[in-house]
Image 1 (cartoon, helix red, strand yellow):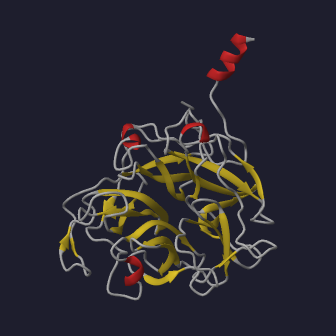
Image 2 (cartoon, rainbow, N blue to C red):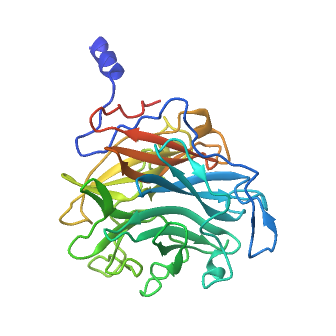
Image 3 (cartoon, one colour):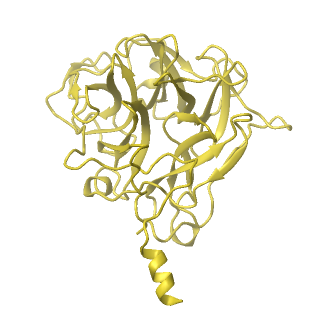
Length: 366
């Protein structure tokens, strides 16, 4: 019996058929984006020439533009110290192969003298997720942080370079919390292209950090939270005591409608002590997956009990966030494979690839 248990333990793990993955980190490639001091731009808020990505580059979104992968990533300057104390702006990187990137020297979305100044300064524009509609309109969902409140905002573009900001996704609803973030709009792959999906004539997204919620929209920029029968904002999934996601279940990259349901990748934060999973570091972020019904996107059908992706490489376990994190945020379908872009310890950007024809095993458990 002992020998059998040992044999089972040594066998590679596999994922259920509904899940995406496993994802494999390309050899000698990561991190694909790292801080650099040479990028500077005239900051319209401070009036200074700022090394806007000199401190950290992390938490990326990803999409396709004219056959290339474009990554929008969060970048922080040196103007303060500590997580959440610097100013964040969104940088632009483009790649022919998804592995090697050419970067613009100036950010493409940042606090300025515009209608969103009060919501974005001095904290900035953080943690983007980007999608594209079938007619070619890009939408980025990002966190506006003024160091007092954090709110999920939306901006649109036709080229990923020039953006129209609209502010809070809930600005025209009767729901106005002081802190909400992390959008995962539901997408689909059609004719080889990943685009924003519509279900029952509406766009849908999952959102939230301390739980998974949902929202719907008819025009891409005005959203309404999904509520329960009592009128409260409906919780679809919550942290689980004793699991890797015992403290937070923060929505990750755009969700994907597949044959067996809607797959949501999310970032689980581990609690300390017995409240969390003792196999993982206290405070570590590992990535999980949930499956929701395509007929009812609020209905949770399945959920991984252990992460499929976890901090393993040195740059994933040391950086600005010392507990370690693989913060999944960018997912795009490219040349028959899924490219997953993620933040490494709040300091760099990494990539992992899922080839459906040759799937890798999920990350081994510690």
